[in-house]
Length: 278
Image 1 (tube, one colour):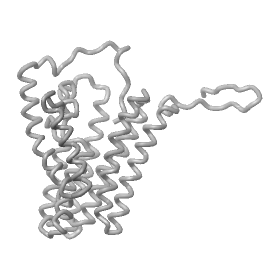
Image 2: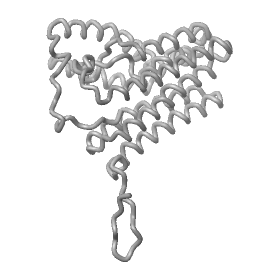
Image 3: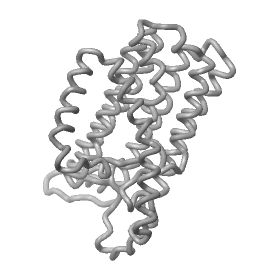
Image 4: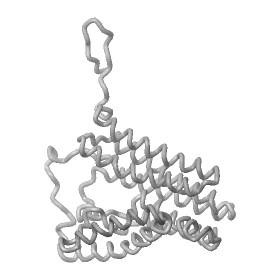
């Protein structure tokens, strides 16, 4: 046991390295994301599916912040990475599966539940694969600036596409067809655990002559989210789906042009940092 002896006081235990004061901030954000995802399940049980989706989207936004906060504060720890993955498995695996099941899949008790299970299990498997590769240096997709498969938060967003369309269309029953939604969930589950290279943020850098246009497009998208949130979410989701084959083609081109860029030299042990918060 590692103790600090303080004169006149009882010995006190030192804080574990993974639980330093700086690490509390990103881990607290991760905990908030987990609570938001779980609250989405609570709204779905009450039949308020719009709020349930909003809660999961909020969890996704918080999930995008915690890793950046950890890097900014230099508080990247193994504990943070493990906590983040465990929280993601619930917020973006279990919560979306239950929300969609309570929304429409319950009409097919067997097939619908199997589709929900497939999505949740594939999300957990993806996160387990991510953790297993944290310290691996031989990662061709990551080295070239790509991701492997669809990330868990985006997978949750994709699986809500029928629900977005259902709300945007005034609850048209065609978008809530349990057979079609079951097939869609299984497809998204496959995309999460697949080895398809997908575009990472580092690859989504517009050329200088298009940057003002991209800024204007982002501003208009934010305005559209305020005016027509569900239709805009559906459009954004479809655009991301269209970017998946673009990522595959881009990765093939990069590999063909410079194969050595996919396998960087192993860095010195003193320069190899610890795992980041996922």
